[in-house]
Amino acid sequence: MVLSERQRIEILILLGCGDKIRSQAEVCALFNAKYTENQISQGSEIFHKFEEHGTVHDLPRTGRARTLNEEKKWDTA
Image (cartoon, rainbow, N blue to C red; front, side, top):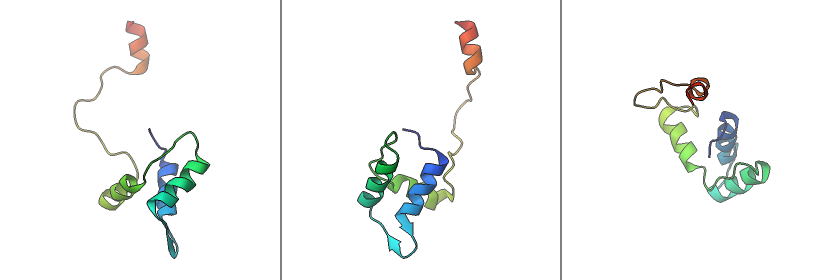
């Protein structure tokens, strides 16, 4: 499942907003109630990614980049 940047930020806000720090179960329940199409089981992965890298953006992946884009794939088929 791919979450949007906005959804990732919302999970971080739900985890620790102001004086109230919510549990993983509370965050999941609140998030899943609002976003029924993207259900999460835990938000800790997003929190740890933010703590380690300081961002919720997808990080660059290693390896060779794709040479064909979607448009070229359909032309060759």
